[in-house]
Length: 257
Image (cartoon, rainbow, N blue to C red; front, side):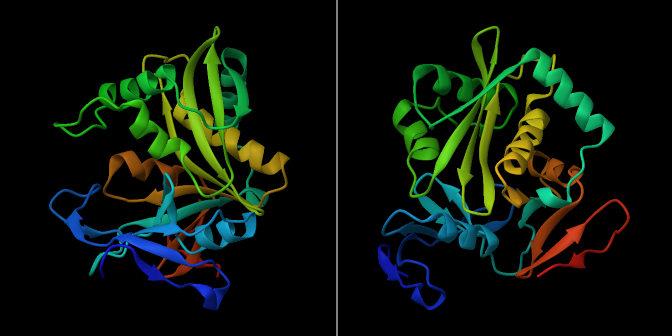
């Protein structure tokens, strides 16, 4: 399709979108593979219910754009979510929460861009080896487009240590769900695992606010930066258009919807 082609989605009561990019490209997750991730721009801000519909359909958000992996012959990318009404914190999780609550101060506010966040984002991706070899430092405009611009409700969970910002988790908010968009943190803070702690805190927030799901993005078994999500059990994964439940007792998925 050509860029800026309208993609009407009125049959399922979702607003129309513009298809702004739909080309084959190198897979960002699995080396040597080709990916297709059409990028779609809503024509207006989404309601909470409309965001829920997109998340349930496997959508992810990148700035103002939504996408869903649509790669020929490959289903390695699986949307993953936690039903927080079906979730019990393990002893290990409770220890992580207690330790984090002792060391870190957690606050919630609107996503913003500033030099402190941009520097922390870059430190996270370069020190942890998440940046490509030819990657350049992030600038404020790129950060704005990635984590602040949006067509849905969102907030950021801020983690500070002795008054210094050491972690940010940007989270979308629907009627029935929260979606963990992206989390970055200071990798030199080793007194608590901020990555795990941030997910556990978002589970708590979802429970406290009466949401049912926390979406964790994409699970990709052969991609280490994405594979860790499967450790949070029980969870559900979207496989071939259906959600399946995984827990400690079953190896094969149990179909949910």
